[in-house]
Structures are given as structure tokens and as C-alpha cells.
Length: 483
Ligand code: DUC
Ligand code: ZN
Ligand code: ZN
Ligand code: ZN
Image (cartoon, rainbow, N blue to C red; front, side):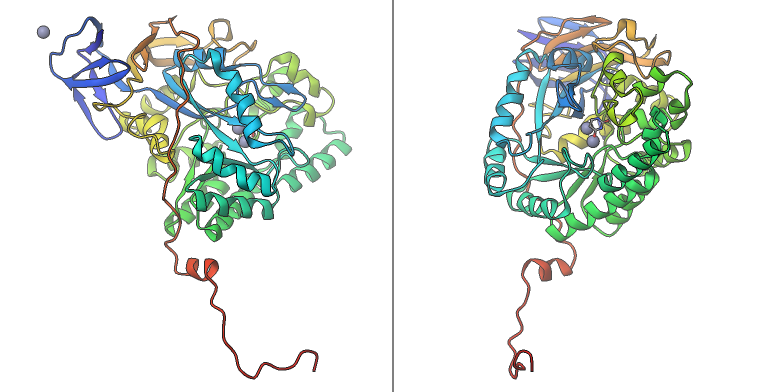
């Protein structure tokens, strides 16, 4: 059975042209004019783009004494509803847990996924077992490892562990990721704020200023450089972190930065809302920043110094958030966004002229497909690619409301926002998953995407050789010790 998308304009990361797209057995099999198939989908007035890839989700994740509310069933429905056809979730071993055992646990969560998915493996502790198991994890097609520089006493790794893990990543052709916030400083600031009676949600933002993120980003970049490995910095929220990434790239290092749609569109005033629930629902790490930081992130997407827009989708209900009444450090950190990422970025990016349509495709799909080494299976409209396609209607409008969302939580951080630009059809490996606002996604259709290691290393600098292969000086006339 063949399907064809007719009369649309194809938009990829580097081209815009009018053509039809023929799909068969989950793949794109032909691109050209006047194609026909068993089922035809009319894309008149629409853009035909690679489906979005969200490389940063936390579905059904045990965290801060609870579980994030969206699982792979509701999470992938939300993704598809907004034009995202693949998610990359984080597998989080608990302290001393085998990485392979944790991976089995995460794999067990995915049976109702309706779009494709992959994993990043978190390094939450260090030892010979972790060192050894990292190779097996890479063999299983998981070639990216996440490091939390925050969440002291829980997920956080120290610099010695991070350096050891980064070197291991370099050996394995894997990509290290960092959550860059100085966890020691966050813990100290949190205690100080609480002691002064500053226990509301705004205390969360005060405890994680941009400097905390800038310091950690710089540190991670330097450690990655010494380990000779590229680096991917998740949820870049401020100028200080962006500046560190710009500087590293300008010096020739492979460092990538990922702003979130939330940080691009929402600001710190949310935490000063009089309504406790309103503010707590927006507690995430890093917190929302002021408009100057937002401008920096937009500029980074334009200039190419930031490459990917994600969500860090980690949704908690109001009831779960209320665990932190009287102590902001107990408010589960996280916000949703899977369903809204593409419509929000199109509305605030493409419709305002800040991003071209091709840049939109690059930052929502193609760039991360390349960074994670799954291009052109994903992130491309080309013969042989997976038929993960969004047919985008630039005129379609809606007002975002939690009452009509796929996420199971009882609110939406973008509530009331009017978006212009929404999917008309979404295909996941050729399966019609969304038609207008109707969800046709099939739980269980989603498959794991295995990735190959990447040979890319950071060996541009002349000092790199000195660090990895230190020269021993043969000396004569060494003085006797202690004389
Ligand atoms: N930040 C969040 O807000 N939630 C999940 C983990 C994280 O780093
Ligand atoms: Zn014809
Ligand atoms: Zn994080
Ligand atoms: Zn995250």
C-alpha cells in the first residue's frame, strides 16, 4: 500500500520546493511531481517538513519523590499532536544501579509509545562497573551520556567522575551531555533563602541565577576539551551559558547548545505571580530568565551558535507541585511542552521573522538528527528516509488550553497563547497519526531507534596531544631526594 502527499511545498533544513512525496513500508520512496498512490493526502497551501525530534524528554521518570505524570503513551500522543515524530528520553540509573538494569526498566515503559524513540543514558555514579557497562550501552545503540552537574546528593556527579566519563565517551565515540548548573552553589543558596524565610516558588529562581549556569557550562566545556570529546549542553537558558558555548565554538571546539521553547517564550515574571500554583507550575531547572536572556537565545538560533530547540518535557500535576508548599526545594522541577514546541516556535519564530522556515526545520529536527548520528534516517525528506513527516498548515490557528491537550496534567504553561501554524497531517513511519486535530496514533507503533557511535572528537588544538600523550623527559644528573 502506498500513500502520497500531494500539492505541498517541501521545506527541509536547506531547500524549499514544490513536490509530492510517496511513502511505502514506512519509508519515503519517491519525491517528484504528479505522484499517485493508494491513499492521497492533500497538502495544498501546506509545508511538508521532516517531523520534529525532541531530544529532551522525561516520561514516567522517578524524580524528587514522585514520577513525572506523562508516560510514553500520553507523551508520544502529545508529541505527535504537535508535529513531533520522535523523542529521546533519559534513562536514569539510581545510585549503584547497573546501567543495563536501568535500561531494561526504561525499555519496559515504552510498550505504548506511538512514535519512535531513543534514549540517552545518565551517568549518576561512577565505578568500574559503569566504565565497563558504557561499552555495552553503546553496542545497544545508545551513544549519548548525560551528566547532571546539579541535584547535589541525588543525580549530581563531581568533576573527577565527569572527567573520567568524558574520557570514556571519547574512547567509545559517544557524546556527553550536561545539565550545567553548579549544584554546590545551588544547595548553599537554597539553604540561605529558606533560612531567611524565602520559601515560595520565586526562591527557586533566586537559588539558580544565570551565574550558576554560566560557571558550570564553562567548566564542562573545559573538561570536555581536556578529554578530547565534543559536548552537548542541554537547556541553555541564559547569556552566560550561551557566551561560553559561542567562545568554545569560535576556538574550534565541537560544543552544541540546546535552548528550550519555554525559555524562548516565557520569562521570570511568572515566578512573581501572586498565585502560588501559577508560580510553582513553572518551576523548572534552569528557571525562566529575563527578556535579555531570551534575546540572547534567539540570537544564538539565528547565528547558529545554538542548534536545537527542545522541551525538557517533565510534567507534574498541580497536586504533585503542592508537595513544595512551604519549601520551594520540594516542588518537583519540570514543565511540559511536547505538544506545543513546534506551534509555539513557528508562531514566535517564523511568523515574527526571527527564523526562516529552513532554520525552523534545522533547529526542530535536522540538526539534532545529525548531532545524534541518525541522519538521514530521521530529520530528512529524502528517498530512503523514514516517513516521519509533518504536513504543516501555516494558517491553522488555535488558542492553547489544557482542556484540549494530550498531556495528562491539569494546566499548560502556555495557556491562552494563540498559535498560528499547526499540523494538518502527521505521519510516523508512514502511519497517519494526526489528521487535523484528530489523533489516530496507535499505541505500540513506536520503535526504538539505535544509533551508531560517532568518530567526531575535539582534537583541533595543539595542546590536545600533550594532555593525552605526555612526553617524559629523560634527565641526567637528577638530584638526590631530600638533599
Ligand atoms: N530540570 C527540570 O526542570 N526537570 C527535570 C530535570 C531537570 O534538569
Ligand atoms: Zn495526476
Ligand atoms: Zn536538566
Ligand atoms: Zn531534563
